[in-house]
Image (cartoon, rainbow, N blue to C red; front, side):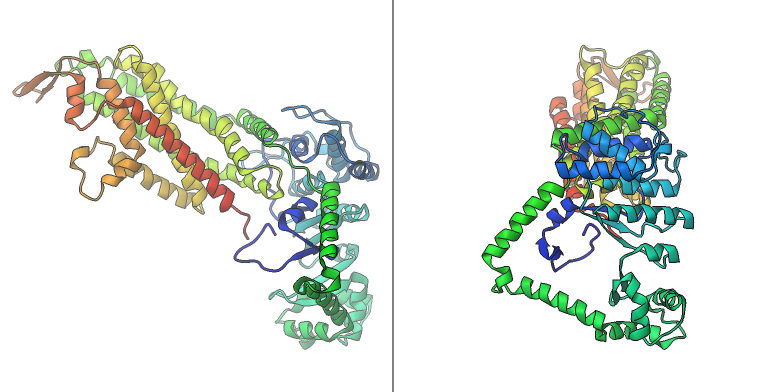
Length: 589
């Protein structure tokens, strides 16, 4: 299953044949309890995005007939409003999208934005129907739903269950968990399984046989189908019930001793024997081979379509770009704050030579580089909540429509990178000329590259912290500690030659170490006639070259090496993010 904690043992069988987790995932759809949808897309765009990844360009006759059945059974609605952009939609995908829009009664709101915490959109019931519609695009053989009526009003819940009933009649097996359903919803079900809080079976069988079971095996009478199957077994064995027959353990025991329970045990016994006894005739080599061939044919006919990596990356990139365009506030905020900070530091240290002609701004230059590093480090922390919010959509991976690498690459390229380029660009174009920093050819561009590499590396560290932590509060605390440690050992607050024994290894990890050294060397290399004074010229030393001063504070002339080190660190952290998301980011209760 997709919601697993701990170790799960046993096997899953479909029509009596064993299924691997991959095969079961290909043949089934799963609607999670919480509706996790992209807030900036419309209902139609959301379905079209899913269709481009779930529906092959050409469909089999079985799929085509199923889609036609969906379209015939759906209510008539408005015409198509066209593709949502981001690539052409195949004819098969268009047919499938229109079919599920009609089936789930979403045509009226097809052009409405889904919405989220900061964007008003469709209602909760419409979101739930959209979640079901997304899974129906794959035309699964089995559709699982985790408490689909939770949080829905009675009218919305009935509407949803009626749609699920029609889906079941069209040939899809619908399995859902539900708590204390209304009478009309309960009567829509064909087969039910009652479980106690401990997960033990209190009844398993046809819905219409429950009343007879209560009368014959539990010894309870009454009218109205035995009082609506005795309040659906009083919430399946409520310990506070005044009727001792409805005690959980007694319900389990009575069912085990009943005819229905004995029949179920016999069926499970046959399946278990076939699984654990490979010498049985039903499980011989020829039979097993036949089962495998049947499963392969079933997966080929009814299994989900899996797109190629370039297709996944392309459509994920389009969605990320569309999200950035439709929600420009974060991009605008980063741009405005970067410009304000650039102007502020530019005018504060304007024309650094004329303000301090005796020392040519030696101390100021060290302070400017540290301020830039501090600003970028703090800016990286702001990406933690945004990244964690976007990461919620990653649960889509559980349905198999895209892989981890495609998702992370698209998020980086069209969502994260734009925010990492704006501040360095503002500092290079505004602050650099205002302050009149090193005007040697190529140094301004090197300054921009160093800031970009620094911003990218610190952001990826924060991304890794974001996927490793369980909450925004924990992510902010861990991210702040990491950034402060990096700044502490960058060489500005403490000379690198005087780092206490046992802490030298932090220099190798600290991106601030490489970034600050590269910024200082890029600025001081080529400068001449620099002095050090006490302020009143009582003590004056010099002239020095910029390289001499940088060496005095423990900085070496290795700008290119430092930049490459930052880029390699960024690559390592990027790879770590993908590994963690692939192996450890799962849907859990």
